[in-house]
Image 1 (cartoon, rainbow, N blue to C red):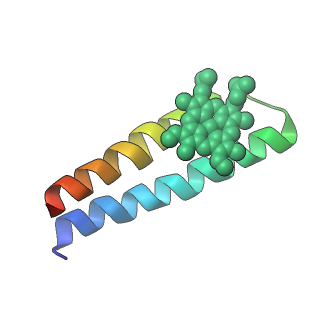
Image 2 (image 1 turned 180 degrees about the horizontal axis):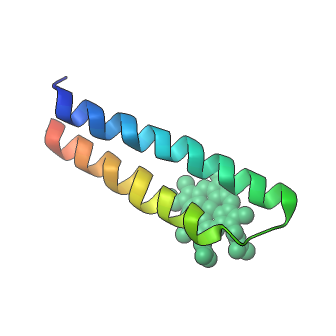
Length: 58
Ligand code: HEM
């Protein structure tokens, strides 16, 4: 795989790990102050970056 899609997909995976960990932590702590950060990390970070990586790959 060329470098650009790989960079997008690796960044997406990193955002997913951080975003999902935040979601689990928010649920455990019952503290939802950071819900918008979680939502943007997952939707913009994971979903959008992964879509861009797959599009460049195609
Ligand atoms: C193990 C995985 C996940 C856990 C445990 C989790 C947990 C949570 C929690 C606790 C909230 C706050 C709910 C509230 O404010 O009452 C939340 C909100 C949200 N999550 Fe997740 N989440 C997970 C994965 C994801 C993923 C993969 C996405 C998107 C691709 C996502 C998108 C959102 C959005 C859009 C909100 C609404 C934020 C808001 O209302 O401000 N979550 N999640």
